[in-house]
Image 1 (cartoon, rainbow, N blue to C red):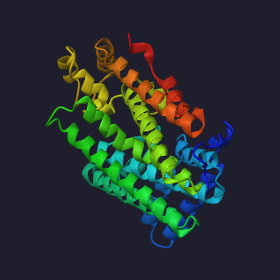
Image 2 (image 1 turned 90 degrees about the vertical axis):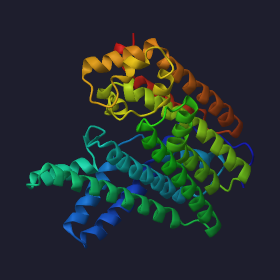
Image 3 (image 1 turned 45 degrees about the horizontal axis):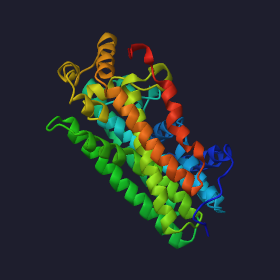
Length: 359
């Protein structure tokens, strides 16, 4: 049974996700084999889903392992499978988020929707028909990924009480993230201004619950940690998750797309009510910034928005908030004995910022 303060694992060991990668590959390979017995369309869908799972930092499986090892757990095979399941849940959310945002590219290559749109056009479909297939494939692939992730949790081989606890954590994360995504889209409609507090709450719901709270709590639970420690892992996860989302919001406007392989205009085009834009709404530069939202921007227009968001203090405000949440997370990380290097998941991404237009 875990003690209140864990034994911090070696700095590099918790980052090793090779076992989780093998578990993810195995579950996707098994699903693809079964799909081959159904139809070519089904196989094509699983191939696109598997391709969508490639890449990424794999920090979610690493967080599961970090918590499990800190609290002297011995369920190493289950840790790998649960980490793979959470990574597949992330893939599901990414696929469906791209559908919501109308994006066909992810990490510099066609995503599930983009793959099926291209296939349809190459086979003679018109633009509207190709769009319908792309939308359908994205929704179905997300559903399949989520169902496969749940199955992996349910069959991870730990005692029933632990499995039930994991499923409860999984369900909670799924419910909170779904609510956050829906709120994000609703606020993007512009029917009401989003306060900074509302934007932060949305960031916590969209990202913290499944990307940080779930893996840390799952790892602690697999190690046999008590309810108090599992709850403390939730607190760590919430602070890390908000910091991560704030960093992602900065990258979504100020990032170097050659390094991030993500759009720096999507958040502006879809009028995402991020804390960056919520703060900007209260500044004198808002009318100029607002005139650039809701449409595709050229390089010169993006440079102007970046300049305005820097001059009005919004970039500095979000950066300060991010570091405050990192500070709070670090205090709880230290108390629990978790690896202090966990914050590097967020700080490493800041090297991808493009400062050429910040002045």
